[in-house]
Length: 192
Image (tube, rainbow, N blue to C red; front, top):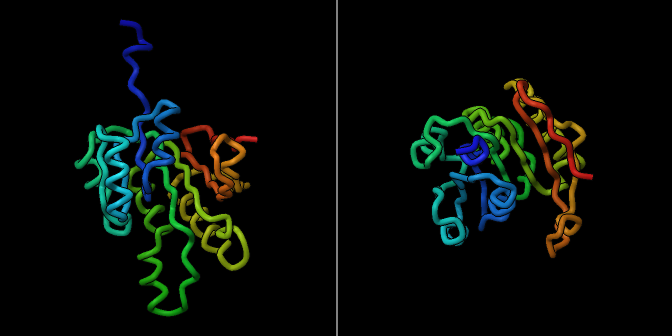
């Protein structure tokens, strides 16, 4: 048996997976997306139908843990190559005071960060509405980048908004993409 046929495919986890658009793209690129998380039961049902051999967690990322993802899927203690996150459109800025801390704990950005730190993937790809990089919302993005860097990740800080229509998708969908990797990896570049 050649080393090429014996080689395992890289593995991924898809957070806020929806019906599985990013899962499909990564599967076509040679990944096994062994675990997907989404809180919408209809999206979960579609995802399970489209990817019947992998685990789908019908939960909010605010509630799921690294242990649940690992034990409820084929991942176990394997090293994860990439965490994908098609996060829902950014949430409004939290007000000041005690309520701000509570909203921060319930923020998808906060829990994306938490799960990346817990799962320790080699790489991550996060997409969100491009408005996250504009005006007052930009501070949330800067905070996320700072916290991921403090956790040992390199970040492609010249983040880009990419339009899906430029990459063969029959939809004009412009989204902000944030790429990062552990410090022991080479930082990926954005497509031209």
